Image 1 (cartoon, rainbow over the protein chains, first blue to last red):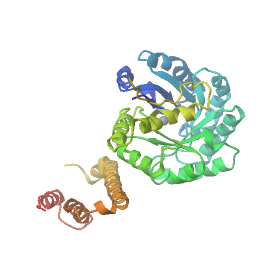
Image 2: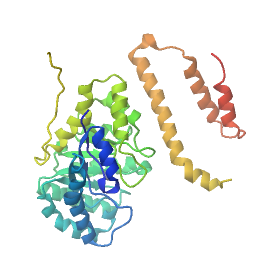
Image 3: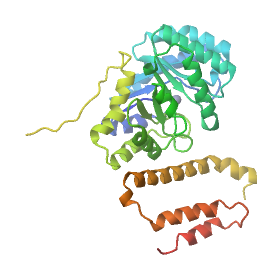
Image 4: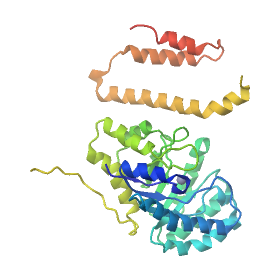
Length: 275
Length: 77
Ligand SMILES: [Zn+2]
């Protein structure tokens, strides 16, 4: 089955992960700009990182026939350093011209501080000004409820089109409000700290499949790209058709990401042939 | 033996995750029952699960919970 992995941190993973993903049906990944596990000191470090995900990483993925797209942003954690963030942001509009950059992300809150909020708003304004898609990270564990509520407040106060905004890492306690407000949402599958494949499929059964994407993030921490395939398997095991699975795991990413014309992979339909 | 702090530090998130999976399974079971009330049954295994949860919810007790759980799950229907 053809699968799109809409949130994938390829720089943290091996070539073998690309190879296995390709063998298990992944045709494209999208890599948001994120925290490297340590706070960077120089704006130039970010610029090289953006060059890595927009120029070099697509060549790694291409060796396995996987299309690679990316997002640029100052992530929520490093947004705590406003001077550095604003210096990095000054260079982001040039990146928007790059052939595989889809928008601004991941932005939002980590600990929901005033500094984070100021940089979140500034990056949202930049996205609006440059007509970019937006990918929003919501905080981890006990910070998630507060951060998600504040995220929705910030978005409400700005003139964003909810259809062009993806609020990621939602779980059972944070899915309703973003969906009701018309945003896209993402389930991020982590072995321990976020959503599990079974719970993701539960939410698909409860909320339907409109405006929902599933991803496994897969970064340098405890994570596993193949939790996405586990979800596909769980979804099919519960009796959902191949086409329904394609809608969730391939076509929905096409629908959201395809709002940026650079993402040119189209939704697909399986048909039987009478011979 | 690990210290008190080490046990909670190393295992809190794992246990949180396992509890969420249990909650999600119970929800899934209830939704299935709501969807097909005719199929809803007094399955012995569901009874065992709820009794196990009750056992685990006792805080002031002896440190032999795993053994008591296994004995509980040894009960024949
Ligand atoms: Zn991420």
